[in-house]
Image (cartoon, rainbow, N blue to C red; front, side, top):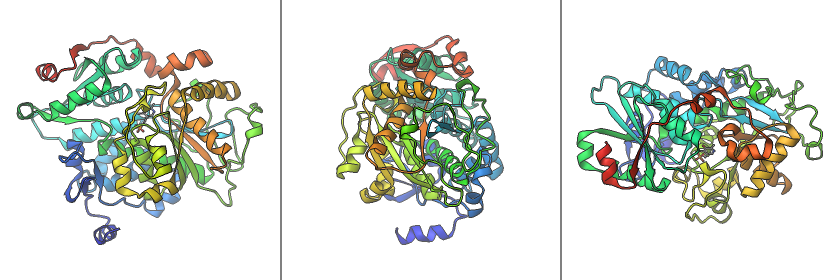
Length: 489
Ligand SMILES: *Cc1c(COP(=O)(O)O)cnc(C)c1O
């Protein structure tokens, strides 16, 4: 840590500064980092220091409301640019749903799919939309946001920005390569959200967005920004659910919240630790052979290990921020599908980006995870190896896991969450983890019913997804050609 960093730690109350992962000498404020997305040098914005939670917050995590934890998490990152009262309004309106930690068999599952598009990306997108609206107050030129998606991001961003005044969004998606539900989430809203079906791949969509953002003539005409997963304003609010889950697990208390959305649809119940353990499925005896003591004794609670199904590694990076801020987390597991660039790096110390391979957990089909650059800005290889265990899971293992967990515990996992579950199985079998383990469930199983239903029978469909399925798709098809996109804009 440099002198500069140490000094800044002492003056917690001054506004946070952000630098590019490719240039540690130039700083911008939160508004600039958020509204520009990518740094001009192609790097990713990172906070100059990771702030610490006040000890009063850490000691009451077990009983705090999710929105208050979100407020405490985000506050130091926007200090001086967003008054506490505004931030409070934003967290209350962004998170009418929580992040319940439930017991399933002998595991804990952190359900991150109770937002409107049923994947964890709602947590980042809904904060980002509200923050953008506030940061651009008083501007009369509308902001135009371009976003390329392979499926989940587009829906979350579209939903987050829907009807936000002064901002319009164009989502580019690969035609015919996203699910019908995802297409309706993206192209069914209308209003300030436009959808373009690109005749090409996700990479083509991403290329088009980058080309448009770099087009000088277009930049003169429109106020442009992007909202992909490298935006720091999507990442910071995600740290909150790690802290909430870790706090609940180590406090030994049942969370009073996390249940803003009724979870009867999946038959889940709150998990109370300590003497009042209520399991998801009391009659699940078949898991007993593998049963381990996951419940920390109230006298010596062991901080939790959290397993994160990962692709672009934005989610895990948010977890690392939560850990550095002081959340009681022992370690992370980075579970990937066969696109195992990061697990291989953790093994060998050599980072080798690859071409991605298609899998059934397709939101994690990333061969060159962009957030790795952020991880490397904060941690050395040795540090990362201490904090993160890497593991990779095949499609066959993923399918087996979905079927097995459904049979044994009556619980539906989506393919991404199943990668996390199986990753934990494998590390337990190798004796690489012990103690309390939680798995982040990144999407609702009904979102991937094409894969899940044949293995389990139909997964229950949450109301928000049923509503989205009823929408009509309004999108325009364009060739994977920059001039076609420029014409549309
Ligand atoms: C985006 C996504 C992931 C991967 O998250 P990263 O932050 O890119 O690592 C995992 N699961 C689901 C369902 C997703 O939508």
